[in-house]
Image (cartoon, rainbow, N blue to C red; front, side, top):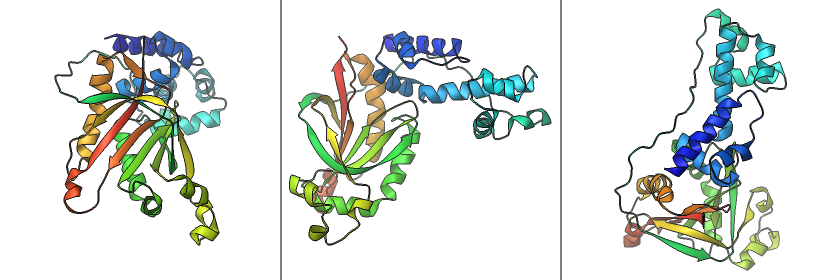
Amino acid sequence: MDWISGIQRAIDYIEEHLTEEIDLAEAAECACSSAFHFLRIFGIVCGYTPGEYVRMRRLSLAGADILEKRCNVTEAALHYGYETPESFSRAFRNFHGILPSQVKQGCSLKAFSPISVKLDKQGGNTMNYKIEKRPAGLLVGYKKRFRGVPYGAEREKQEDRFFRTTRAKQRLLRGASDTPEIDYCVIKNIDEEGYDFYIAYNLDEWSRTEMFNPAVTGVDFMDKLGFEQIEIPPQTYAVFETPKMRRPIMDYIALRQQIVTEWLPSTDYVFADAPEIVAMHWPVNGKEAKQRYIEICLPVENKF
């Protein structure tokens, strides 16, 4: 219950300061949380980053103010924290679908109401997990900046598209990997706008060193593919696995949501400021293909 009431206090703080600069650290303090943990928990509970929530609330209120003639466009821009009327107009159009100057012409506006967080009955499910202290590691992969929060339908769409449109890069790295049957996904650098999402593989030291050497690879374009080394610091992880089957994707999506909405708030753990790792154990052919499973490794630390 604590994290629900904490997020509500943070929302109340945001609502009271919508026309001022929002201090993320102070919002996190209202939720009795670190800034890093707050970003993740807010996204889980509300479905938006704090930055997205603030932006949509401001633009919703600005539209109503202009419609009711409480202020003009320039006054609304300054009142809701935009540096120029031009930047305000761009944001306004992206949200409402029209320019501020069109509001009085009878066009429709969008309304985004304040979120009220309430405790909902959940749980009653069995979840197997283990807590592991893992040493530092090093993966090689490539990234894309995802928008929004690392949970929910928006991530599913972005993740699916990223995998579908980078097949050649995956095959190249998989061919050099020590464990070609495992695809890794790594989430890093979470902030108010989004996060870095990596597709990565486990390469040995020689392969990591020589992969950009044309004399070894026989090609001169490796440095243009966006590959980079991804450092994984030593960290404690809560580790969950899907059932083994040929296509465990749907179970993976459901398990991911279950972890953060049911398991996490029922424990003494909170998110740690470290990469989140997903290991997709994906044998390709034969009977082994029926033994595919996905391992979710959530970085955690004890909150006490």
